[in-house]
Length: 562
Image (cartoon, rainbow, N blue to C red; front, side, top):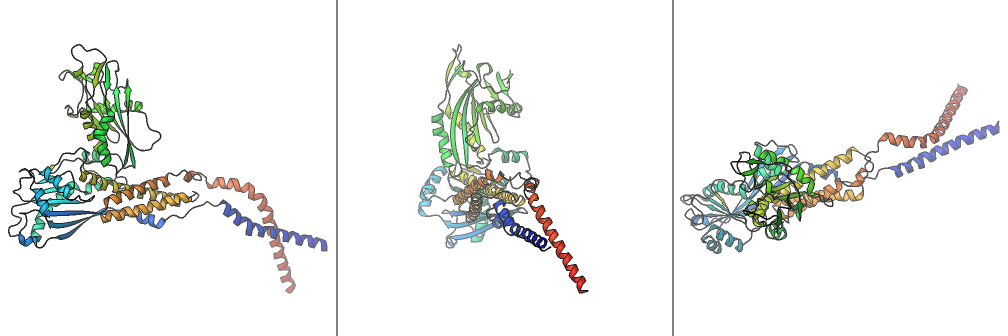
């Protein structure tokens, strides 16, 4: 009887010891070794960035030339004014524009520059005197009698960051300084709409974050034409020779790129990196049969058939698998002798002046007719030297459109200086940098917010230290970019926004985030039940038996007391 009691007592102690070891040691050890590692993320800062409040500041300097202000008004210069504009976009996005305008009179050297014979010479002379920082503007108010501007022109926009504004003859007469500035303000505002950021450009840059309802088909086309902002672009020039037996084509693409394209890309280097390659494709057809127009004595491609030209050609172009950057394709097509000359017509059945067209976010195609090289009795193949200046002029204009350089029609009374050798004015670069900075900030904010929501909803995704580092880097760069935009430091804002979008996309597309993404709870139970159930059932039954015996003893004691 005593031996049986000792054995039963020993069994109870063994069951309790095993249960204690499992609960105190086994369960914490299992929990620790099987938990999902999740590094710390700055969630509160990400939520603050999700409510995008962008402040854009631009510095404007208004310089009054001799003859536009009275001596009494000159005594009150220099003067600074600040103008703010609020533009709520939606519940989580708001825009605020600030223009810091400084008014002063022209110096002696500036007066000498404004006495040049032409506005272009004056613009160059003013640029040599002082170079305006990126994102700023200088507007020179000149007398109405000045010969710098033609009679029907009120504003001259130069190649730099300078504009000439014709003043009114009645500006000085009996005007206080406040009245003078109020009279000049509308003209300055029109100059800012052309040379600096405007609300239409900024809202177009937010198109991925906010859905807008454009008012016309033209505005929809403008918003979809340009490529999205990217750290780099691949530019490919292709020469399509469908009939090598008829043509022996020679094109100096390397020299043409150095002469026409590289100056533009060098100026665009703060925005993105570019790489260029070229190729020649033989027996490459357009895939669309042109129609012969007896009235024009030429083959034609109408606007409706142009959409069917790209797909057959694109299959021959190849792709750069080593790069994830967008590709801009520029194709020069030389028709074969049986379909030459080949003309492109627009929707109004009018001949396209450049004989070329472009496809939004893809590239451009130019048809280069060579029937004039044949002569009365040609001997095939005909050697043809392609006029690269003519070709690159077309491709350069298409490249500007595809990269987002705005070339809208200037307002009435505006004269815009033609593009220089670089193909891009300084103020055009500033407008592009404003748009790209805002677009990068909006894209990076959306990416990092989506990543934070994904990691919060799916708790079994591993968050490694390198992902947390990339997220923190993106958040820091975003905060710096927003601060620099508010301070008006456009160059730094663009640089920080590029760093933010690179870090956010690197974190979002990290392969380690997919390791446990498709590991549901039912699979966990299928793994752990065969392991823990055989061990836990005897322990639980022993514990239940011990509790039953303790309860029985307690009842017996109570019965004895009673």
